[in-house]
Image (cartoon, rainbow, N blue to C red):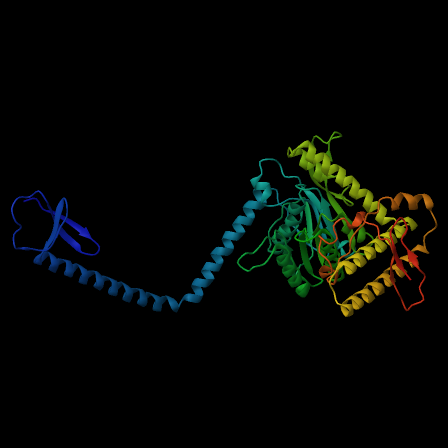
Length: 471
């Protein structure tokens, strides 16, 4: 009879017999399991041996545990010395790493002063992982240049620049040589960094909410001896709100007297704060070919805000976007520039255009009121509200018009571009449906709609078939 001894963690040792063995099994075999190709079984002596193995294993574990407990009692009396030894080894390892960096990578010994001045500073990590030579940059910050606005096109090296400043500052304050030709640093009590924010789905927080949460923490804890780096604040919301919040936060950071590097794509921010005390503008330079077929990133810091050369359109062209899309984007960009220039230089024509838009808005709201289903009391309250709002806004426009000289040619040029812009309020949402007002822009009212006012205001009439009169 052919017998094989095998082991299983649950059954321990057992005997295997081929299923092809003729004849019945002897009575000495117990715990028999018949399978398709073999028969598994044990004997009474084998079960006893398995039990002895289990008892021996348990005894070994108990003895080992007792030995470890005795060792711990002996070591605890010397634990303070062991901690000092481990700290000494860690310090030795750190100093050896510092020495290797300073020897092999052209690091220099920094100075501790009241001024941050870096000549030829480099990013300590990126210069090691990039195949091409890392381009160094300078930095200089004093109380009169404590808030530095960094602008530039995408991929120009803005984020790398401010992160390198933070890293070399930390390296200098822990006693390490730094990657630069010369470096001096003030002692910073805190380092705040607001960079690379994304959605936090686990906390149910959006990108913008995460940005605001981090900025709130910075504003609560910032001190005059702090250092702050901020990368593209306000990009998680609309352009207008983002710029407004960026300006407000920048004002608070300037007032804190801390050293701040503020990277942004809001070019208006650089213009708004340009004359503010303690603010200076820098940009990362880039060179564009005359035909916009090539863009060369110089990765060098330069003084002043970034020139407005439509870097985004050039990068989009280099990314092989369709020509039709690029042409449309260019035309929209030019139109927005013209609109911004017109808005930035107020004139009498602009005020007249604003007045016309206000009257057209009132006209549409009156049409909605006429075609709606509001009761008389609600309708009267709405008309009074519309009248009060209209009077306030028209009075403000009239006061502005008194400041502008008459310019009939400019007036005609601007009023030709005014369109019928609707102003919807929560009250007018329920006045009339779009079906009731369909084709309203092409419909003339045979009789003017009149709102009686108790105030002694001059009458304003919309010309060119706009039959709305405020008496």
